[in-house]
Image (cartoon, rainbow, N blue to C red; front, side):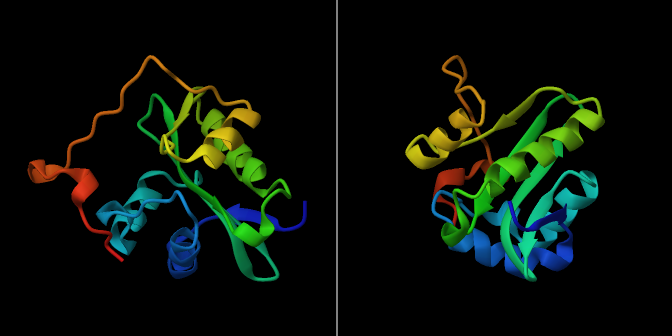
Length: 151
């Protein structure tokens, strides 16, 4: 694998947002605004990473924890650079950072309709759970699925 993995910082936000926008399966919401991502990174230092090659961000993952479980969000690799091990390397790096904090169980949320992402995670050793239903609520009771993208 070429490229260098390093910690993601808020200075990467514009390039990160551009990667997410061109990555199918990444759904952007208000929680992905610059301010929200800055709060997320401050709350979860050392758990989110980018993969750079020649100064270009080719992939990224947000890692976080509630102190009990880990969560990976918005793993994305630029379409022209997939199948080179970048996604696996990013997921592994974030999972290792969580383990270093004593967090041994990690979850990732994938759109049911995103067959490519489901296949990726399964091939990387992650198990799809059939025993859980994800339920969400947005402040004020608004339906999260109908909220506009912040960008």
